[in-house]
Amino acid sequence: MKFSFKESKLLTRVLPVLVWVSAAVAVSVLFLHQSETAQLKGIAFSHEQTINSVETGYLRSIAVSLYQEVKKGDTLAVIKENTVAREEYVDAMLQARRTTAEAELEQLKAELTAAEDRLLIDQFERDSDTTSLERRLAVDLERARLEVLEIRSTLEPDRLTLKDLQVEIEIVNRLVSEQATEEYELQKAQTQYDILKEKVDQTQALLDQAQTNYELAQLRKDELDQKIPVSPLLSDRELAPIRKAILVQEKRIAELIKQRGIIVLTAPFDGIVNTLNYKPGQTVVRGDTIMTIVQPTPDSITAWIPQKNIGQFARNMKVKVVSLNAPRQTFISQISNMSPSLELIPQQLWRNPTVPEWGRSIQVPVQPSFACIHNEIVGITTILQ
Image (tube, rainbow, N blue to C red):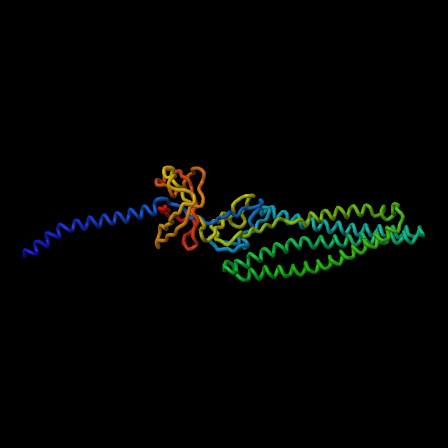
């Protein structure tokens, strides 16, 4: 009984000491942990790039979704340089000009035939075989030139449409692979493309032959012109109005086939779509940020030194970086850069959300083995040398 009383008395005296020691150890551990992680707080940043509109127009399509992984060169969006209403107007004008050009070309062909008849009649009034041949070659040359122009007036608009279909197939193909649209949409677009592609190829073959005929006619006329004394040729006077009219038509065809702006925006590097600000069909102005692409892994940490602690840090100083979430990670790095002046610290690092803070920023490279994400907050502490 006496022993028991002494033991109880001893326990009563020792227990407060044990509690005090345990509390001191716990406080010391918390203090050391806090001093290690809270000396500075920084933000892990990945390389991020904005994808901006390079021209004013409308978004014909967006080929990616928010937080989707992309590879360098992948199509992100397609911009047409007109508004939707303007695009419809341009298409209508294109068809109208095409019809007008075809009608005027038919008129020129008729005028060329009439000029040929007049030259043939005049041929009987002259005895020179050379003059007769010169007239014949001049008419052949303009007829070949008209044939080239006529084929181009059909071919070039079809080429523009074919390019549109090609871009559409690429986008639909991606959407099918992501199960965002049905397979039949791709089949439908591919069928339209194949039919028009065959037509374009056939027309291109006709154009190649017509171009060859024109070059041969030009060659024959040039060879004959070298043999004729330098003097105004009768055929030149007779065909001058038609040649001017053909030149006008060539300029109109050049305007007709001018590329309607199709701008394809592609991924500049492997990354993730971090923001997406527009939807297909919306109008964008040159410089508007359509989306941002961010690399999956941060490559640097930026921290801000309060003004009172600036003297504790220097360039090339070794520091320890500590993650603030589980599982706890650390790595040793060094300060690679320091800003030359104070700047506003990001709000998420303010001690009081309503009181702005300023500091001198530093940058610390991230080791590849350190697992973190873009905009994650980490702790930084100096290493005693």
